[in-house]
Image 1 (cartoon, rainbow, N blue to C red):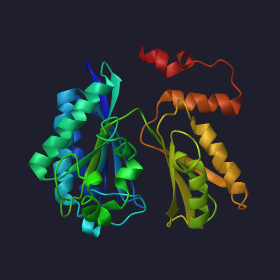
Image 2 (image 1 turned 180 degrees about the horizontal axis):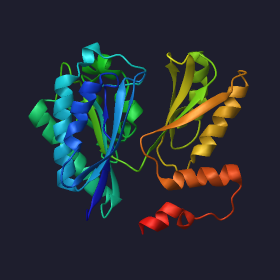
Image 3 (image 1 turned 90 degrees about the horizontal axis):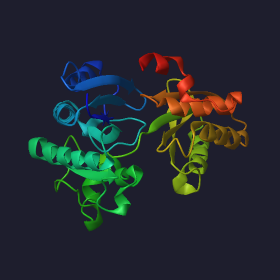
Image 4 (image 1 turned 135 degrees about the vertical axis):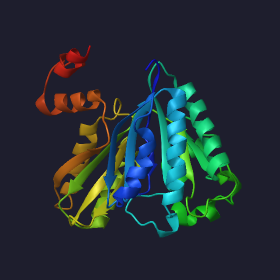
Length: 297
């Protein structure tokens, strides 16, 4: 591939494996597109797909998947712990190799136009593609979720960038271009969701916490615990270990401890190296010292 762009579409189905397989199918066996990973979560009722490809091939595959999701997912019946507003909830494009942010912004607008023309699924542009500063933050865009979106878009400041009405069953999608994001979750040994919400409030940037960190509390009912679910929007400026340690500190006041963490989807090696350096006290470690990296050269 001469040009590589990453896309991480999130679909609002994490329980029906047959539906998930159909939604993911457009990313398999296509020239110019490579499916790297997909991860479904039953509590969140969501599947996160990670795919890379050349511009036109990636665009075609994403649009096809959105069409399938809009047919298979009925948002009027959807329930899950994760905030959501559409069958295809969010589509971010990320420049990886020989691609610019400007090219990804243009691609996001083309996809937004296509999915409205083909499937009548409207969209908001967010992050680097946003048409207004109030639309940059995905949390602001998604506020109200599917149930409140038909009313929300009546306000002039929340008119969709593409489309005019919410799709009755597929809702609305957020589409944009952004830096690489790490979906990083930390689990606590309590089932008290209020504690998780208080900790998330103190960790996320929006309410005075860490820059480049979005966080919310989520109940993992099957495990009987709660989770701080985070999106680290720039791990080079706010590393994972800093969020992990702040959660540990905040949890102590409630007599709660961390029992584990997880990364959803793929993660840049540099994010893990920075964390290793911190916890192991490694001095002057370099990505060039990673065996697999040297083998792949």
